[in-house]
View: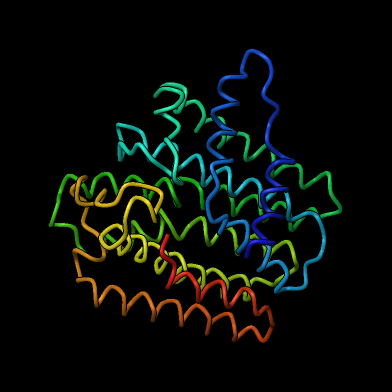
Length: 291
């Protein structure tokens, strides 16, 4: 994990914009947000899925950087006073606390746009152009109104109806707000490595389970963890009147269903008859993570 995370950090550093010119302040805020650390789960899942299908080139790197930029922008906006109003993220002050609300909004906007500038650098590599175009289409859709933005919208609206949130509504939020970028990561890895449509569909289904299980663990940790361990405020869901998998089903049932989803994801990937032991261990570790 440490070696792979270090490699991802090196890739991110290579693609981050230089802090210069009249736009220097917003670029500093962007880079502050991206370099705050984190699990780097999405680029890691992307690269490991790429390897699962035999990928061994450099065309994956722009997408690894791009997916982390998109994920980070979503966190910058999520922490804003108009959203979750959180002061800590990844163990340090959030972007809007350090740079001000207006600059944090612009930093998020900048990261989203720069993510696509970065992903387009795939055409400067030896990548198959058709695969690259398909990967870009997946990235755009999963980050947009039919993906993460759609999930964020449903999440905000859920706050206004409190305990009237249904399981169907909550699963829509988890599928789109959290699982969509994990699906994008793994699907892009598969596509760039040459997986066929049926294989990509299996990967998408497995990534759904991984994403929802990951979010359920987030809900569990919001109740059971501490600021020091988690690196961000706990009890945030209760503060924002959010219905979560834990409040809906209870801690024990939520934990049980999360384990079932993780096991199902591994089963789906094993059905492809390809081998990447690290990927399987990574997915298993998500259900026991403490931050």
